[in-house]
Amino acid sequence: LQQQLVRYVENIKVESQPRSHLEDSVSTSIAVLWASHQADSLFDRTLHLTKMVVRRIGRQLDLPVTSRNLKRGPSTTSSQAAGNGDGRLAVPQIVLHLVDRLVIQKPSGWQVDDGKDDPDL
Image 1 (cartoon, rainbow, N blue to C red):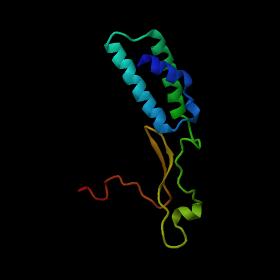
Image 2 (image 1 turned 120 degrees about the vertical axis):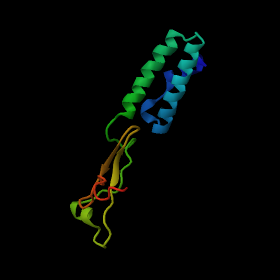
Image 3 (image 1 turned 180 degrees about the vertical axis):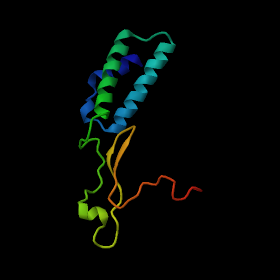
Image 4 (image 1 turned 45 degrees about the vertical axis):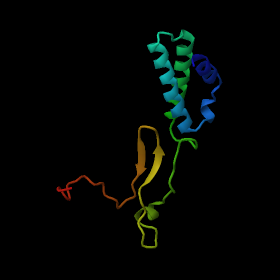
């Protein structure tokens, strides 16, 4: 398993992989490292190369807005934010979707629910 992991981490093209593949790669790599360590057979080379690649993957996943990791909703102008001109209100849009957080654009006119309006909810 360690030899396969080393071959994989030596050849992975982090920048061109989809997010889901990178996330799976980290999980699988950590599982192999953990199992090898538990079996008292973890090689230094495997650990070193895998740590380097996991760091590269982490940096790639933490990149700010890019076409690869951004799930952008339709853009809105200030006039569209209040409404679409046809009676429908614009809705909040996810403008940045990372593994551990979201950035949501809230059109003007939308109120954040703080629970104070209806304390029974």
